[in-house]
Image 1 (spheres, helix red, strand yellow):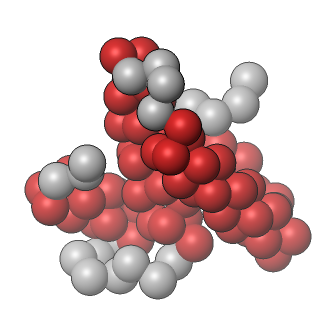
Image 2 (image 1 turned 45 degrees about the vertical axis):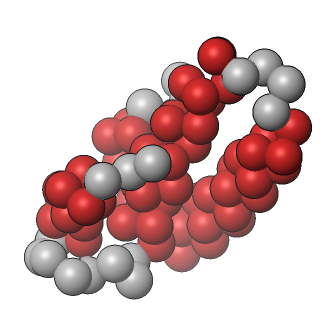
Length: 88
C-alpha cells in the first residue's frame, strides 16, 4: 500500500505541482510504486493468486499508459523510463 506522503512526493516530482495527478507520467509513477509494493508482497505470499490478478491488471494499465506517452512524445517517454528505472 502506498502512503499519502509517498503519493504526494510522486505527484510533485512528476506532475510539477501538487494535485496534478492527471498527467500520464504521474499515473505511471504511482502505478510503478504500487507494483513494486505488490512484488515484495509476493516474496512472502507465493500462493496469493487473487492479488496476482490485480498485479497483472496494474502492469497492463502501466503498459498502456507508457504506450500512450511514447506515441505522444518519445523524449518524455525516454526520460520517464530512465527516472523510474523500468527498462535498460
